[in-house]
Length: 391
Image: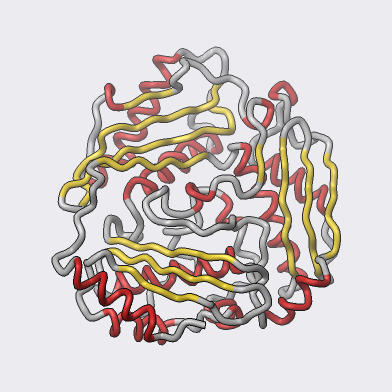
């Protein structure tokens, strides 16, 4: 296992190389988000709703649940829990809540459901018991920067805000012609490592056949301009917005494009602005370090930036299955550190014990909080425990 001194030596070299800060080569950066009714997000929602129900009944439940949607729902995975899970009931409830109630769309809450969920394999159970060991090997990354009040990159925050807005307009029936499913993509202009404007917004929304493209474009433009961009001092003209590039989109969801749990790992994390680990999050209980390790890494990175120790920070962790402690823990500040890397690493080690048990305990992860993460990203939401700032 790496000692604490080894990563310090590595980072001291990096920081000496970039004493005045590392200029970002990107002058434009694009991130995307998807609506809660996107096919992949339907699957994430189902997987996390099942996890939440398992944790509600048995906080020590072990789950790895994945879903596939097309004209039906297929559940696959494993679970070890005393909980009695109504898989079919949860699936139908979540699909209905996401707005899929029209059989004419080729997928709705009454779609056939096939369930292939068995008990957790004994080999994994041996290493994972009582949160003592990691549920798998792998690497995870956490990131924070001072672009936004959430300490997240601005492109992904804006993309999430747009998809959340589109969903809210539909759910409240403020815009009656909207249907579930949608996407948003935002290109932000950077100067001297800071966001200074928005260059392009691309939006796709599923809609009623009767509505005209011109009405869709005008409504989406007005909503984005007045509710998202103007409040932060930015603006775009209509030529900087593309809505439904093909000119129409009538059939939402899985009938048009199959969905799968864990396929939107860039949407779920930092919009491509930072590295991501090798595993997805949804459907996995906290013993799976793909999830809890990524949350711990974000917790560390966010607190380093919030404390003013760096303007940008990336934290890397790596684990071995069955072993309690990370085999790697390292920090990169991209030349933006305001104190020595030794001080930053001391701070991070005092902040949280990154053993599996330490993470689960510090962040109180054995509770039903995960359905909230299944849309609009896992980071930047103030109520989630890994977003807490320790003063």
